[in-house]
Structure formats: structure tokens, C-alpha cells
Image (cartoon, rainbow, N blue to C red):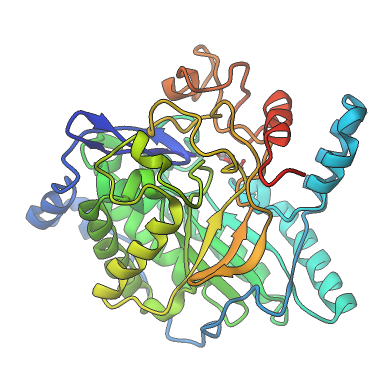
Length: 415
Ligand code: BGC
């Protein structure tokens, strides 16, 4: 995934996981008027219903507080394997191997691993006497990655994708989560999806997915919001939604989707900067886009929280992805999101590092590619061959060894 962008006037801004771009004055959001004018379509007439969840939800608290992070054993092994080729970096790599990283449920087949991860987390929780919290990214929306190509998914609206998303993906995840009622679980839903609705309605695949995305994300919230599961919605990042108009359009979409799901109490909060590179502080963003009121990610979180409060969504917590944001911008355009050269690991995962923030967390596992750089490969997105992107990149999600070592070398704070 990587993302998508929006453009202001002639500037492109950007995104995160998927990759894409469009144009529009940030104050004038395509998307909104198109929605208002729309007549009920044949598709809407046959739309699957979303039953709001009125059952008990997780308590309104930071799920990482008084708990420890669950470390994904597969990520740890992958990092330790790299030591063989670069023994000189062994000490740094051992530190990276201990970091908690999110587990991406990015296709139906990935669910085969879920009982194992949950069982291991429950075992560790029991052994330690305090919760060891795993973080899952739920990422298999029908028509996924509508504004970019690199993370196009397996489910398609015209091939029963909406029903399959529900029965073969979300329902199965919910059933596994429900088997561990005493295990705290965090789920981050569908990076880039709703943000594409806020800003990329001029991309045909996004326009065609407007109601489908809203219903599918609402369904995922309603089903996954369980007493032991803390749900966060993806909220893109400042280089995409930092502008006032984009942020308020986004807030309105969240309001609508949360209402369908059963109310904003169904979620704990929002995740930002997922798979992106924005540093937490400073004014570096103004070198890229001086019109963005938020030149850093923390500013965005504060302003997003204000925008959400205005539409009645309050008391939320935020996760900021700090896996690759250690080096304040190394790109020439904010819209460049794919395997950005010169990036470095950022702040180590940390609980409640500052007001509003539940955790800094490594949501994008460092070392996994954002998208393939070979123009002849399937899912090639031109952003992955941009002047700011590392060459030789494999498909999104696959291990990109040379890039991983660059992130390690540029880590800030240093390892
Ligand atoms: C890919 C996923 C992958 C995730 C984490 C996304 O860009 O599309 O397949 O799991 O990144 O690396």
C-alpha cells in the first residue's frame, strides 16, 4: 500500500501505502459533492446491509498501557537471518529483531497463521502475568488500493468481492479473536481506504468503490469490535490529509462509517503515517509543501483530533507508525511514497510517548517493500520507479534486503 495523494493546485501531495495522485484544490474535495448528488444506483439497491454492533465493546482505554508488546517471531527470525551476510552489523540487527512489528493480514491465505500468533501471544501473556499485545493490520478490502497499483488486492467488487471479504476474511478473523477473550488485541483497519474516498474521487476505481469501501470498513468495525479487541482506523498522514479541507472531509467520512458500524465507541482510535515516512516533529514538511498547515506528523494528529471532535468523535487515541521516519524528509516530493531512499528506522515502539498518542509503533515491518520497481512486473506503479525510490525493489510486502540495511544504517535514534 502506499498511497495516494491529493494535489493542491498543481502540487501533488501524497500518501502512504498505495500510491497515487490526483489533483484538486485541497479545499475543494471531489468526492463530497459527487456523493451528495448521487441517485440510488442498482448497486446500492442490492447493497449488503451492515448490522450495527450494539454489544459490549472494548473499554475506552489505551490497550498498550500496563502491558507489553507482542513480538512477531517470524519477523524476528527474518531479521536474524540477515546477520549471516553482514556480521559487522550483528549488534544493531539483534536490536531490530526484538522490536514489535504489526502482522499484516493482507490476503485470505494469511489467516492460516492467525491461530498460531494468537496462541503464542496468549501464552506469553500468561507467562508474564501482563498482556502481550499483538497488532494486526486488516488489509484485504475489495478493490483495494484504488488510487495506486502496487498493493492491488485479491478481492474485486465485480467478482463477489464484497461478500467474500465478509465471509472468508472478516468473519474468520472475528471468530479467531473471539476465541481469546482474555487476550488484548489491536486491529488497524484498511490503510489508505477511506482517505482515498476523501481525496481521490477523480480516480475512477476509487469513485466506483465509494459505497463499497464505506460499507466494507463499517462491516469490519462492527464485527471486529469485541470486548478484547481495540480497533483503530487508518488515518493516512499529514502529507495527504494535513490540509484543512482534506481533514474535514475525512472526519465526515469517519462519522458516517462509524454511525453505520454502531457509533464511535466501537473504535479506540486512529493510526497515522502507516507505511509512510513523515518525521514526528519539526518544520521539514514546509520544504515540500509550504501550504500544508502541518509540517510534521504530530501536528497532524493534534489537528485531526480537533476535526474529529467537531463531528462528535472524541476521546480517541492514536498510533503513529515510526518504523521508517527517523530521517526527516529525504524525498524531493511529498507524494513519493515508495521505498524512499535515505530513510531510516524511527522511534522505537513506545507506550503513550505524548498526549493523544497511545503508542509509537512499527506498523510497516521495516525491510518489507512498498512496491515492485520493475516496470514489466505485475502491479508495477510508476511511483516505485520515481527519482526518490530505491531500485531493485521486489513486490509489495516482500523482503528487500538492501533497503532494510539502509534503514538500519540510517536509524534515528541510532541503534
Ligand atoms: C503490502 C502488503 C504487506 C504490507 C506490509 C503492503 O504494501 O501490500 O502485502 O503485507 O505492505 O509490508
